[in-house]
Image (tube, rainbow, N blue to C red):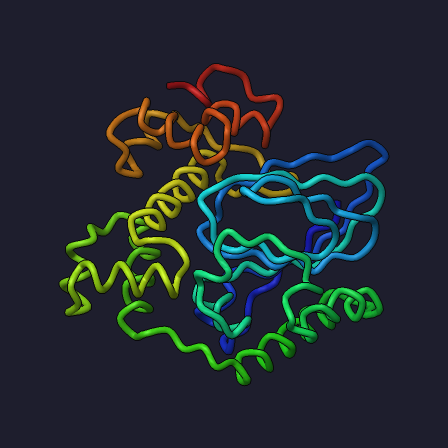
Length: 277
């Protein structure tokens, strides 16, 4: 597998949190379970068909957008796959599409169904572009143009609440967010849910899970190995009540226990020290 990460440009700060190119070939089906990411994901894929299932909706093929969600799903392919993955903040995805986050959340859809021609055309254009740097430049230029034309602007209070939640990895009480914005809890809940796509408490739950999964599988990616980690220590570091609480959250958000999640990334990990409870 070829994996080519890139740094998102400063012009897309607060919109794009990750940018990477990938290419791989498989003679047998490759199935990957995808848990909630705390953001939206844009897959600009070309090559053979990519099947996306779950996330509370029907299946999709090829290049797609997956909005903010608290569900999990799977991707699978056989043959050749290549593309650029763009990780977006929820408000960034809303701005790029020019619509409220509530219209983007829980959405997994082909790019041709988004009514954004510039996005729909990107995979074919990228396939005809010879190098990763020029592909990243094309993606950056396209996204910057969409932002410039977007009519969606989040409330400053909602943007602040999201930044606080993201920085604290979900661990900010609703009452504290409301006090900081100067809004009532009810008003913040309604505006945040509409513009981000999930209520603050649910978004916080997903962000805390993402922190836990990152600690459980540090630096997950090609040719990486896990550091020694104990599930109970991850639970404590992320503010879960106990080991059992973390296990329940993983089952709800990925369909797996933390140990099963770890084995999916690193099949050779045993039940001993690295995944100990």
